[in-house]
Length: 472
View: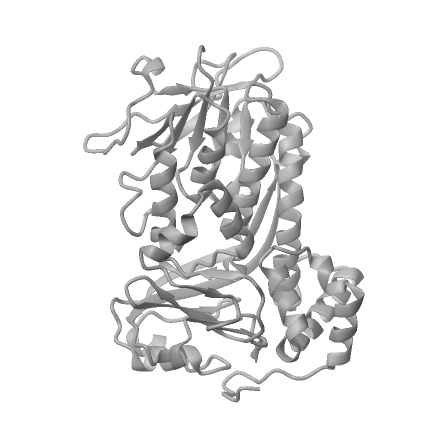
């Protein structure tokens, strides 16, 4: 091909960020999206978009770097912004984190608003095209111009494109069909990026072409949540903009976040099968059992704007592309297709943004024609390691969650529990804890001697039991 071309499968947040960095190295970037109208409200392909989303500060910083002025753009469009612990309440194990200044920005934009803004700016880039209403069905190699799985001799080769299902009648399309496909259902590319999320079929596609399937790691939490929007009045939460109550086995949780349009977005959650109901009375009754009253006060007093919507998350999933002995050239995977985290920790979009920077930096080092897939996936794994250990380590503190535990992990869990108590009492610990949670500092920052001493001096203090409404 005379032009250097990349194809990104999936135009959600991870795919859009990938396309953004690919546009710096390729002449043409084609985003393939299954949804017909990805820019309008809640998307079928992103069912979690109807529930609370948190953009960690590190993710916001990266998006601001890739799309200068994005925070201001969203704020001007009505998205509230505040500092993480100012005008925002965080409860860990029923204890409110000290409302200290952290220097971290909270951008309270709905998922459709955030995704729509970065989509609009991505597709405006020279050479970027969005192809909607098309579903990827397999990968193509130079040896396999027939459908994936066709017989071929020799070692599996470089990925040279992606095969698409032919559009059915009535499917919408934005942007031109690839002119080099000759009207066929193949998009050829120098690099194919899978950003199709947790349901990615890439492992099967690789096996069909003779490549190794990535190993998987899972930590099941059987999380269920339900969400609803309400009309916001200035007096709610005494004028604060958000409240988050941590969820854990035996402890129901949830949150309420101010969105554009003077709305509350309320999500209630429970783990290990303890899931919130979706009828009006049941939703309110569930909110009343949270360890603090803040969310229930909103649910009880505010005007509902819609009906509760449920969602279920079985568990965290990680695919170890970094452990494939000989990964195929011309193919990269990022976003939830690599690592799907417990959404209670709000890490997904931020980790996807970190992975996009890995892709950008590897392309700068290797060149658009020579991305080293083994090195790329190892560097992505290093990014995933931090968030994975934080979230699964927290989940594995609870006996009902099945997963591997070591003496070291038990010690870390015990220390994390003490750190939460200290974050309630000590503004310095609160500041460090929230910077670690927002992925702007490594977890080792909580072990730095000054912080370690503050945590150990804090002592243990039992969090309130479920239903105790005291503000400890």
